[in-house]
Image (cartoon, rainbow, N blue to C red; front, side, top):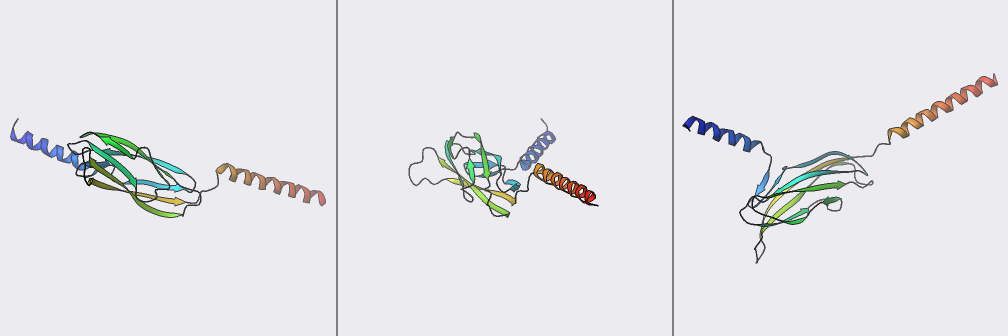
Length: 167
């Protein structure tokens, strides 16, 4: 391989590596680096996927915790072991109660990797994933609006017919 081909291959690898959105610390990483649920209606919910990655060279015990909104956040897995260079997909579901405050909200998930054979203080590496969403009041269903409009039209027709008969 000539020198030009090696340089082009190195540049290509760097370009690919810079486009992958990943947050990581020593031993643990996650992708995507932010979870944005967008706009949610009060009383509804939404699920997003998160890959947790063991970037280290040892088995890691992974602990995932919702630092904010833990009462409305459901994780498909919160504690599990990962082998070196292994990843695991977990679902992060936000269930918005009907009385939840309307507006923009932000919080985070904390993902911590502890060495599998760790005996001692249990100090591990962590990565924090921001979580963002907005809550709007739930709008009435279109069917209810349509029935209300049809009802109003029917009442108007009945009133007009009644008024014409009186004349």
